[in-house]
Image (cartoon, rainbow, N blue to C red):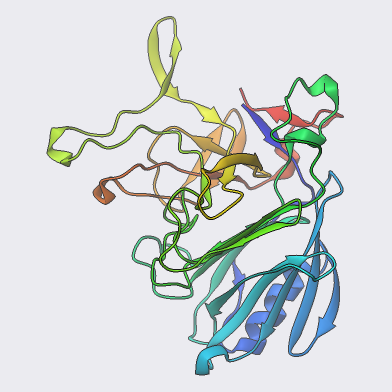
Length: 313
């Protein structure tokens, strides 16, 4: 298992204040402005996401009171030139809520601690530019994931829709998402397209249905023939190229790993001297699949060097 790295990493466990929309945006700007170039827009900022591979996109965050909701702050990804405009997400900030955030120059995950499944509307938002294999040098021993090389690749999802599944409590998105690959933009709509939905490749096997048949089966690694722990695998991100096409792997999330075991939401875990926080939890009661997403909390614990990723075991 390797970690795709994008530095610096900033983790704010409870530092994004939300007494008002303005306070929320100011706290978030304090977090993001050292990581990303930005310009001002009406009632907000436009941030430039830039990956270590040279891919770019824009993240616009502003106070718009959309749909007559004075508590909502708008989040929207666009192409770098602004011609391709993604889904308009909303975060309900002005309700006395306190958010956590994990960010790097090309990725942002925003959430309310302890709040997971059955989200109150507007509590989670995720976006980013993934690590794209077909930009790797030949020495990386990876094959292209599509024709040609990637020039544009970005994604976003949130709980702002009738179907609130997103990367906070599921490995797949529901109604609120957008994706773009080499200028091919897809926006979610309800009813969403099952095959083309934005998702992470789950690392746990399906829960038997009904659940009375047994617990989900977990993929474990062996030590002298004895299972001794979960696998820690690459968090691969997938989506379809058209509303009716199947999801295909587009890249890998930065600064995180996907363990093949059920772990508590917001729990802290240490794997081979690297500290992680579990961001994702899709519970067994969902009668679907579940997994976890471990975010690297301290970049100084990762080995440094010229490689594309670093192994944690």
